Length: 107
View 1: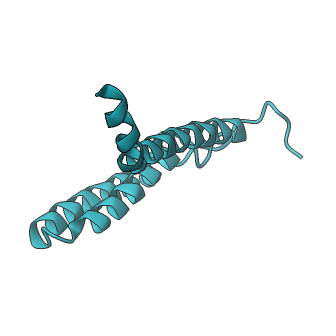
View 2: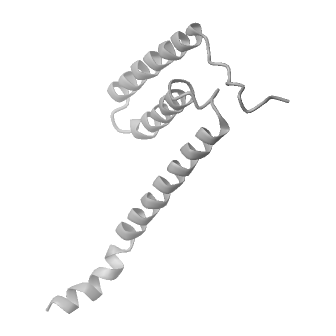
């Protein structure tokens, strides 16, 4: 069993170089996708961006090898962000329903 004073092991410099190379390759792939498939590239670009964000969070923000409390704080921040986005989507999605009632009040 490990004691609370034990620090998690950090990745080596080679790991950071490999992650950086992967980020460069993914950025290049995103650029090529946007130039090759202009109409249908949104889903592919979002998927590539999600992979890049996961790599940055895992390695450069030290979430992969850090303490569990840091991962929990990051997960809580993402959960609150998704909750706020759900509220925005619900607002925009119901505007056509509410606009009938709102327009009548103004006249």
